[in-house]
Length: 202
Length: 202
Image (cartoon, each protein chain N blue to C red):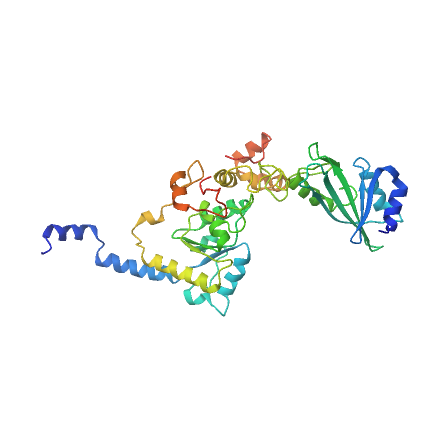
């Protein structure tokens, strides 16, 4: 399959840090070294020949085959050049899942990275506010889209209902919202927040 | 065989008198024909619910055209759609805010049993969170189905007595998150859900 100019350019510039390039169904895919990823993404965004100024999506993929790596996927788009590029990182599913945040490059990465963290447990170093976004913040069963996560969750149904209904008042609000409402918070909530607790089940 | 005086005295003491029954009839007539619904629409059932409320099926025929978007003025909570665990405290709060007398309709397969969503995120039947008077099956139920459920609820209300305080008493959830002992729940709900490996209590 013929390579796109972006794939050729990124391989010429970063050499061995680019582990693999593919063109699948017309989509250009570059798999890059995890530690070099931030530098490569910065170059892709800022280099005048690339200008990938729009981050379409960040997601992750875990395969059923335990030999295959867990992939973190960045889907980039250059609005002025009208081309797409997919950048992937390989992580060991058994090891610590840590990558550098790209929040400093694209502000839109904020919630996308929180979603990947929520669903897969990938930690983004340098993210300003890395907490769960789809599940509630006190969710204790793990990261639902991991292959090791049972479909019905780890807890029994009765325990799930108890956890969902038994949350302290403050667990339904983010730290930010609680800050806004500081003056009107009940004393017990204020006391718990002062102790550094946020949420939890009664 | 005649009726003894003792029998007559017993009947006079225990059964409601003429005035009370007529008052019951009047209250129930008023209540059952002016049910203000609190629409809790979370999914496609809400579309059918809207169709029911619109001109072709015309919920106004039942005195229900006034949607009560504040729970404080609502009589019947209609849960139209699946309920994720994240929404469980919300519907519980809305139910607690509704003044007595109040009733609830569980509309559709998902609200009644979890439906196709037998997974970590979904409440398996809203009756684990709030008490339910009428279950409407269907995926989603047609407006005729919902109206049949509403008419069943009206029938139920016409059989109530406003002097019977026990009807308005709410049973609280036990420490294990259930209204009844686990073995009684399993006996009543067998078979449950989409799985033969799952019981309602666990």
